[in-house]
Image (cartoon, rainbow, N blue to C red; front, top):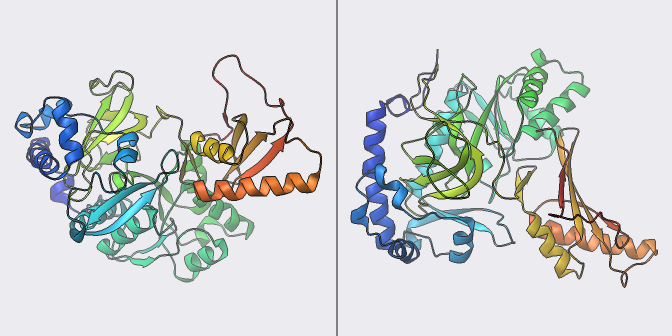
Length: 433
């Protein structure tokens, strides 16, 4: 029996969803026009005023917002409410070290937590459950979003954050945790560790997992489900829009329902920006129609995917998106963290290295590894191992402060990284995703 957190919304008629979207979009466009000079200028450049947007059918007229806009307007240029009305920021790393900072009013947080609560209930969660949130807390949206959603459902919430695997397993067993929220790679690692402890799936109290923040395959889903004895659900979100809970999987496990009362989704041609007909594969674009503090209109996610309105066996009526099939930019997601080759390049150049490098990403024992091979210049070249160690450590520290995660750095001899005639092969991703 399928359960819903807000059945009147999740199972609303298509006419009702369209009516909400029409009314909220018109209101949101007026809100940003009145309160965000940056948006007003973008609209004026296209010859638009709020009067040109009469319903969601006019969405295509609005200008896109991209990561570049977020960088340019950083930190306060896109905030649509006075700071006294904002109660929190969340943040993620941007492309060149400038972070994406998103602002929230209390109302924004309430709506975000509702979206996460819908995801937990769709995974079978009730107020009888014990929900262990093993996403990172702090600036990262994963922990705070699912923590709030778990409270709203009434679960006993264990805010373990990420890491400290022994303690994670102790709590799962001692407190009989039934729902696990974390990245898929961490879930797989927990599963492997429990297997090494000779725990069988029927000795693990978990029944469901809500896993997101990185790409994972159907094979990985099956492995996690078999090892932990659970049903594994996908969840999708972006800090720019709120965090996890923009969309989530239901019992059908065949795509994620987008919370269309809060977000309007479009699929565009990444090269021309043209809106594509339903069922087409293209770049996912989101408009947040209920956010107060940091409303983004037509935000280009760079995720490539497809939408479907086929009737879902779960009874929810909101459109479904498939798992993202790749990116229209060069972003990598490593252990749930956004990493751009340009960030790594910035650190190398700041330390006096040429831009001859290779990034090798792999997955070892279910954990992503990041290995950066860097060419020394002939002037730098030395066979003094102590000196090489010191330089590698400097780069490891520089990368940790830029990316917020540990990378392995190997300095290699000048001219030893293969040169390519066309586009340099900067990234080798060996993960089977």
